[in-house]
Image (cartoon, rainbow over all chains, first blue to last red; front, side, top):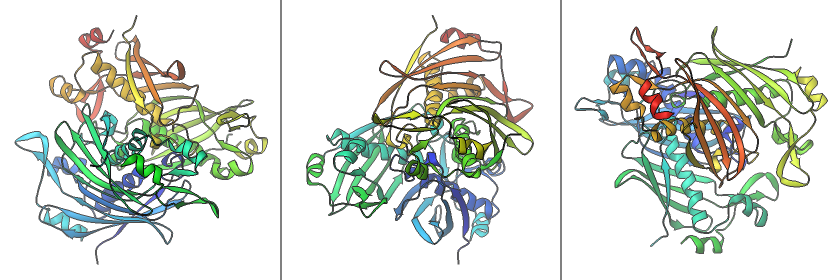
Length: 139
Length: 139
Length: 139
Length: 139
């Protein structure tokens, strides 16, 4: 079974909109944080170290798909459960499930790639083959 | 052809992450703003008026799917092109395309519903059939 | 000595700007969260309950003053230490100190008021005298 | 009289909190954007160019002081009026006034410095004397 990590968030007043519920881009913000937290909990160094040792700038998002089942509001504690459910040559697919206790609030996938600065044009970034050691740490 | 509106955004320094590119939940923030802007440009009053006249609190998101093709950075002007590509009994599907000039940056869909406070429990919200007059304004 | 509470934050990648350090409005976001956390840790119910029992909508900000001493970056854990250092008839002054371990990152004050919906115009809000019971809980 | 620039913002639904008014750290976000906009409108290149030509990473904030007079809500257009009201050896003080039409919503100051990467430790940043040419462009 895929390694799964947990990223806990307390919903704040300022995360909620005039309807009193979480403004949904904040769910994406927490999902993004859960992705990085997943790598760090698996033992991968933070990007600001990897950029120096291996040129890896991060794992930008290629595609996201999320279904929202239940709203959340401030004062609540929610957990993002994160794993990698599929690996391709140059991309991988995260699965994220956000729960409040046993209630599923939202669930979805992210497709990401590991990128370096393009040697031909450092203004641009470029996907690299999935590093084997990182894949081993995260499976 | 479906009515299409434009929502223009200037990318700010604070919208970008340590890799120097837009932190992607900000794209979702702009897509959300483009959705509301779509309704207002089509002549639908803002939610804070609709809640008083018709009890409609807003159009919370049920599902989002976005593909990211190109990054953007601060100082750039980008446009979100928004339409409704499908109507169901109680939901509708937005299409959003974000461009910088002629370059497509990202594209995707949102499924949303019109909701009111649940009369049985005002803490909860409840989807209603798509209002015909709003559908007419937005098609 | 004034009651002091602690609000812990893990700095996320997306909280940082292209210079790699926390985009400062996020410090204000954490200070705002620390203010609400202070009241809840002191035993004051969340605003969505107080609005029903006593009409209190929240404690909007009247004035903020913050000095930034050291930057922070993602992966770091920081603590907001919050107290109320002065009470006036209709306002109070928070003191917030943000530390990473023993290093002070920033410090400042917020002046806030308790507000209700204005009975004469529910679109507007209106400051009320500091409720004695809340003051007692928070001193 | 000091050069003054204008930075226009349309308040979005997601910028507002459960009380229906702008969540105040968003005012700081717009003030930060207005600061950068001020420099660009005065003819100073964006930081990502200055970092390459002169090593200047940006103008991090040292101190902020803001008074909030009136709330704002979504759908409203507001303007940040920005100037530099004082120059010191290594710092300068911005003045920002936010208005909705003729109504002043908030006003305040920011003290900032121009910084470069510290040659002794590129992980750190370091203030430099105010560049004379930039000062001339901005006065």
